[in-house]
Amino acid sequence: MKKLNSWKFCLVVGMLVLFSVGCSRASMEKDIQLSGTVKTFAEKVVVNGQSNLPEGAVIQASLKEEGGQTAREVTEKVAKDGTFSIVLKRPVLNEEYELSVAFLPELQPKHVERVYGKKGENIKKSDIVVEYKRNGKRYRGIMLYDRIFANDGISIGQQTILSKEMPAKLPKP
Image (cartoon, rainbow, N blue to C red; front, side):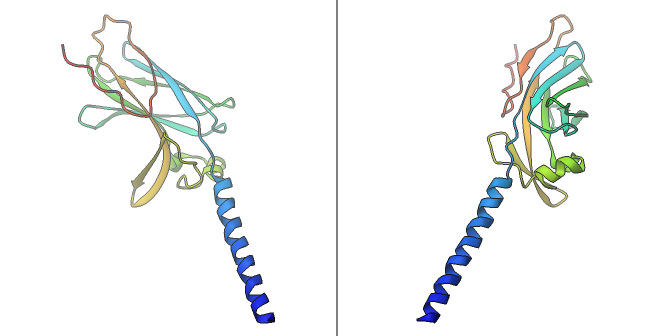
């Protein structure tokens, strides 16, 4: 009878350990909120964003040409209130570009890395979370997009918001 009771005790303790490990993993995951607006003024592309990221977190913005080649890449740090502002210079005014704005774990300082993990493993999954490989390692980050339309030099530019998906191209006239 004692053997049966000790077996039950071990089973209960084992299940509690497994349950607590599962709960602690879920409680470690952090939700990241990231949004922003995009304005263009002639050759300037200005991204003003809001987040719940800690001060000093790094945000990267990239402009890509139609073939996928990176034309410009800029990083900026998040302010104490969670905001950030990034200015990119458009290489060619009358060309269209794809803009991505990202929180990438491999770019983060140590105090941010401690919160979200070296590979973003503590980032809670959401509709703006992306999983990717770099140098054979898997990462989890945040990515938002916008399309920067060609400017004829006469129009005043565009005002749009960052989106979880790349907006469609405008039809050619």
